[in-house]
Length: 305
Image 1 (cartoon, rainbow, N blue to C red):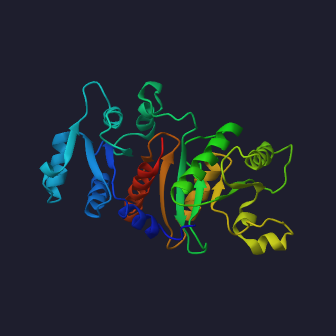
Image 2 (image 1 turned 180 degrees about the vertical axis):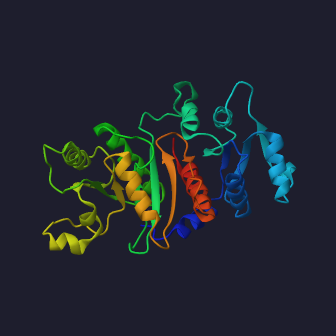
Image 3 (image 1 turned 135 degrees about the vertical axis):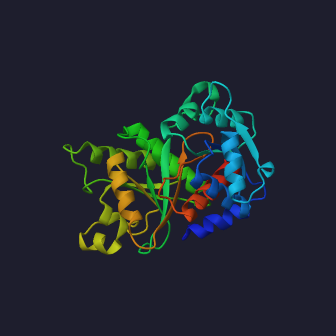
């Protein structure tokens, strides 16, 4: 199985019998409230709105919604909204977390605290889905937003997070390309050596059921014609599901380049914890925010741990 559009993620989420509850940390933010209300209207999730209850109620009333129809929780004393949202998850009242008017570092701080029990032991990473007009299926990039300079074992975790995500969405054997500036290992370029090591780890069964190729350049990963022209023999060229970047700078640049293509739609979430985490940028359009919630709803519903 493979997904070809983000609408398939929305449909998949709508068909889940037991929709999840999302704890929204710092919900008093226009874009966040609007995203949550759209998700409610589409019967995707049930929200718990955490933060300044007076302000949240006013924002709901301004949108002609009855605040009494929503669960609104004041930030607990001596806590941040993220702390309180995580407490709700620990209490079993919510299945995943969404960022509101809090900094990303503040949101993740209670997630990674050992005593909160949300760590899996793996590196936390950002998994982004792109619906591109020039590619025949959804393309995943990772990690473009969390770990600045991942080491070898962190890159292994990043691959496992993305592969597990696709497994939960119904993929059988995701194909992973580990991006570098060239397709051959070079002692002078440590990222290329690590990319080949990651391929060998996958061949030894250390990452579950997936195919990993590395190092590979972006053009050879994305185009079978370019691979043929350069006499690069790879059966997955032009058909990769996941592209792994060497560091946050490469990931950020790649992501912003993809986002600026006409008619591109994307969604993302943060993987590696025991619960999915939704982060959306200030510039994210409404459909992106909605699909992010839909994606997290699926992951939270299908996780086994």
